[in-house]
Image (cartoon, rainbow, N blue to C red; front, side):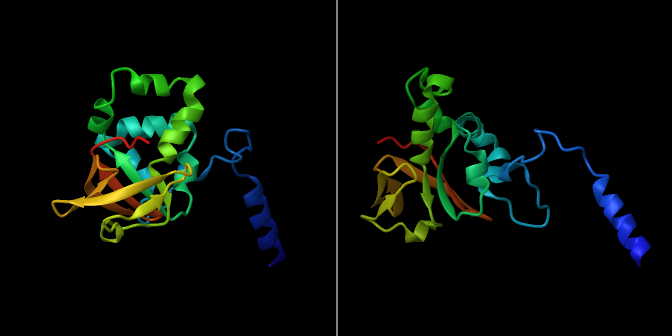
Length: 170
């Protein structure tokens, strides 16, 4: 039994060399094949959210959104970003605009998991950047701040994603 313990300890010690790159890769790099995907994994696998994923990476928020949560993310599509004035996205991705980018992205995230049916008319929801969004129902559908329509809702292991057709602005 003692020999087995020693062999086990040697085996554990023969793992991957520890470098600064792999000491703490963050929550976004973890893979759990048997579970439901988290918000980051779902967005990263969506062809309609490449702009959002790029922005989240540039802002350094991948690990935050991969944490257990729960979170509600109002995720603008690529087409939603295209509605912004020309050059807006490119400008926000510049390193000098990182704080502004983080503020905008956090305006799309709420702590807690709010399914579509929980978003009642007149409901105000506090966002991660400290500001609020408001919900108004029009034609039987919730609208966020009167401009963004929920196109689809996707449950995630750490919350819910509401795919929206406009970028939320304060």
